[in-house]
Amino acid sequence: MNTETAQRDVTVSVLPSLGDIAPGVWDACACPEAADGQRPRDPFTTHRFLKALEDSGSVDARTGWEPHHLSVEVEGEVVAVAPMYAKSHSQGEYIFDHSWAHALENVGGRYYPKMQIAVPFTPATGRRFLVKPGWETLGRSALVQGAIQFAANHGLSSVHATFCTGEEAEAGAEMGLLHRVTQQFHWDNDGYADFDAFLATLSSRKRKTIRKERAKAQDFGGEIHMLTGDDLRPEHWDAFWRFYQDTGARKWGSPYLTRHFFDIAQETLRDDIALVMCERDGRYVAGALNFVGRDALFGRYWGCVEDHPCLHFEACYYQAIDFAIAHGLKRVEAGAQGEHKLARGYLPKPVHSLHWIAEPSFSDAVARYLEAERRAVGEDIEILTSYGPFRKDRREEQE
Image 1 (cartoon, rainbow, N blue to C red):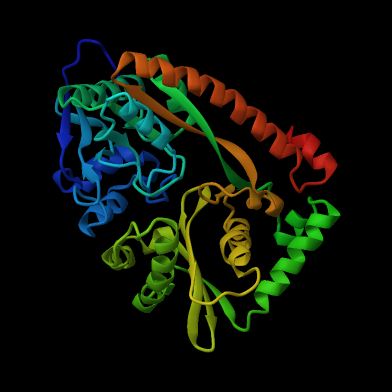
Image 2 (image 1 turned 30 degrees about the horizontal axis):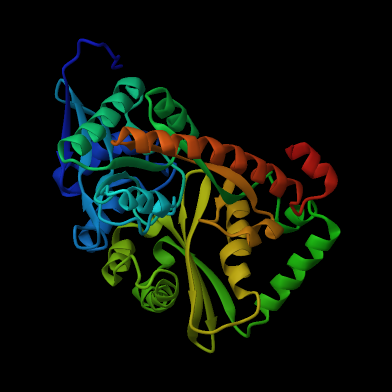
């Protein structure tokens, strides 16, 4: 087993494409838990997912996500990697720093381009400093130093690692990075036998509301299918692309992912996907895209071409809970924002990110802001949890 010593020869390289590193070499750092053929903790930092973003043209300099991935070698062995991008905007990140950009630019600074250690378009917590077991301290330190050095060498304003784990956030703060805490809504599986067992933990009023919503949704005049693996076919992506385009146009102005991404997903990612498709009169009218991890289901996109009462809640939240229970997953991460998720059993959870800002006085100002924000977010999580849908005795257990 490898051990870390200060005397080792460490080299940090910058890779302009996932194609410049072998899938097995990357994944040995990104998802060593999957070496036995099982699922990774999440699929988003796997070579196959990140390369699908690049190969499909969803991620490149033209879209404002220019790859500059980091690789750390110790005596010829790659022991750590990180997905890193030069960003010319702050779209598709979900940890919002637009106010920081405006503040710096208002005093004559330049915020963009910046460096982003992240999974593009993916507000899901996971490791961002991808290190082989046994190399955690050296690997993280080398990745952080490499990212900062790259930004400094190119005169860039900042480095941001978003949706990192709590453990990474703690380690990064000890290295002098700024620690930010925001929140998301997750559903936790308390070993429920079925959906009714989950409902039994809710207050009577919330239980009745969810049952009514599910009944309304199921009465949309068609059938709801949960598809994964070989059940997925190209025609499903033809339909889902229409849904995704509609949602993208309304939320972001244009979709983040290209149509070609879904073709690649059919070939290389379908075992990582759980796709909800709502069919009526032989036509798909709505759908929700989820990705499957070892312990969690990650909700990503929803869209429709027909409006039906409560179908959004059913496809995005209740079908996800059903899938998690059936497959023994510990939680559902329902994506960014949305306090409406609280009434449906999804509770607020802290989300972590790390930041380095080159300009000292601006960095100090952001640090003060983040300290106040962390307190506010902590209080908000506590208050929202107390107003959750669970019975009083269950809330006391969670507190």
